[in-house]
Amino acid sequence: METVQQKFIKRTLHFPFNTPKYFVRLETGQTHVRLKIFSLAVGMWLRALRAPEDTILKDAYLALKRAAANSHVPKYNWCLQLKEALREINMEYLW
Image 1: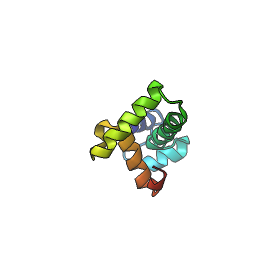
Image 2: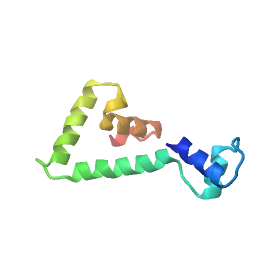
Image 3: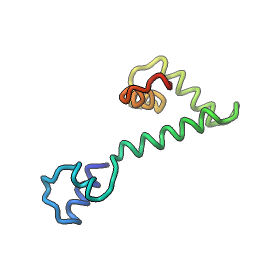
Image 4: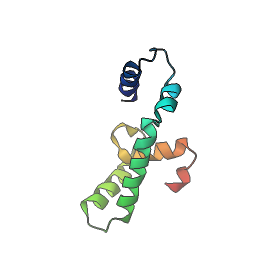
């Protein structure tokens, strides 16, 4: 997704196609798409943790968390992806 965004911005602003991504983000004030996704995921995680028992959100979160304990492939598990993202920034202890 970020690649498409970068290509669009480079074409729109008439930047050379070999312009570094960090320069395009700096000039346009954009952040990494991955950072935005992480921020939204943490917000969703907090909503799930605060949700009352017996709600769909809480039940779905707990089911994904149980599945994450038995799997090591984060491709299809949102909880496992969040745990991996926290590990990458050395904050896995929050999990």
